[in-house]
Image (cartoon, rainbow, N blue to C red; front, side, top):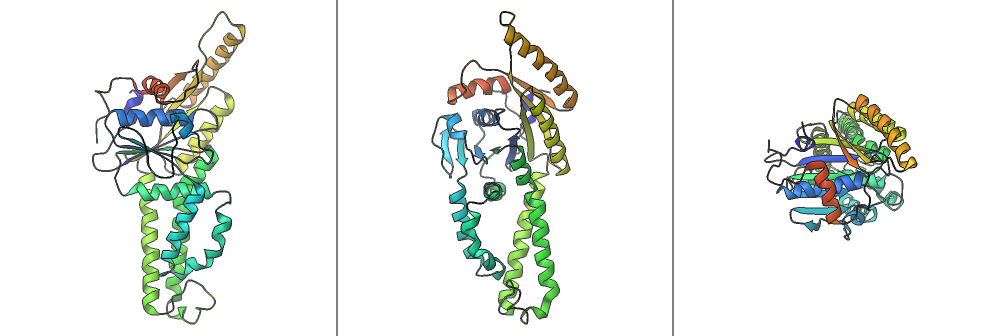
Length: 328
């Protein structure tokens, strides 16, 4: 099986590809190259950077905004702006507060949240929710933050589903006592009509979260591809992240080994690095032998700009644009 076989498309539903790994291994380069390849084979493609320290714009050598920004034919890109995302949350919450007083209790916390750790993950998950059911794109690629951030992002559906379930259960169990407890429990409606609308909003939100969880754990819709370099720290962090993703029922189906030192008998230092990396490659094959493994040699130049990214695209996926993956 070739690495191109790992990128399959659905005829009517968006395919989601998460590309992640340890910081500094080349996730953004691989993500951008993958997006260019998908666009080149005729798929309407969106790439979203979920890393608060964005480098996607640097990689494409373009200014990328918080909204879909055209890059090439069939390709658009987004760099999530946490401040803009928080403003969007405020507006959304203000609209929902008309039906659900439970959200009012958080209104004074938004300014603090906008600069708090984790808001980038919340914003990233909201973008996932935003595009999940529209099927506007054939494929959406997530250029993720370093491993820890990404694992928290992907754990959101379970956490939010549990939280929403508890809110609904509490509200139902209180039943007729809601009015008496209005002054104590902030999410109780002021009358039966408001209470019914509030419950409907909670149920709707829970269903949306359940849909997101189902999409993330559907291997025909969502896959995770790991980028690493042939060094022990990168290898074993990748192993741990794959085990964590497996516990989240996420499909991990590909490994990209980046920055492989070429053999050079004329340079003692280069030769020593090459021999160490060859041993690490043996470890990689032993640990991840059940997945497709692709390799990218160390480049002699900085990979920046679309032309350079196409070179990586060709290494990973080949330059034959007539033979893209078959749609499911």
